[in-house]
Image 1 (cartoon, helix red, strand yellow):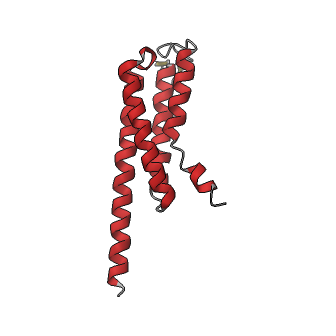
Image 2 (spheres, helix red, strand yellow; image 1 turned 180 degrees about the vertical axis):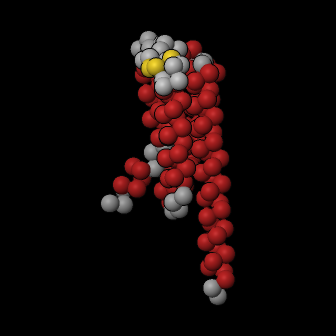
Image 3 (cartoon, helix red, strand yellow; image 1 turned 90 degrees about the vertical axis):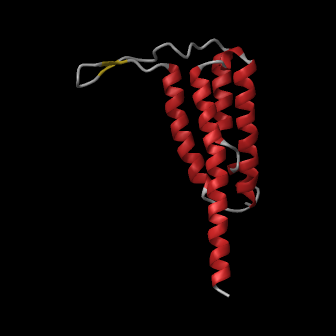
Length: 137
């Protein structure tokens, strides 16, 4: 059961990155509309594949921030892995054609926010734990 917490430590943005690359390399056009829906206002909403990835990125960011509230060895492993995932996003954005899109850049920035929020939340939680331990003496 102890190894299960290290599986949970896999950064979800890494999974999103792999999914984006697999679809992009298979020829999916991220600017192509996925569907059309007429809203009650009469406006026609046509989300693209890229739009759906940004929406999925927002959900992923929420889950990552939620995971960052846990403390322990697994969270440190996850923060380091999240940092490597962000670096990979950044490198791929610069050097890989399929990753040179605004959608990919937005996902990269979400990954950066995940790294910053993860470290910030962990530091604040650690300070709180130290303050509580120190005041109990």
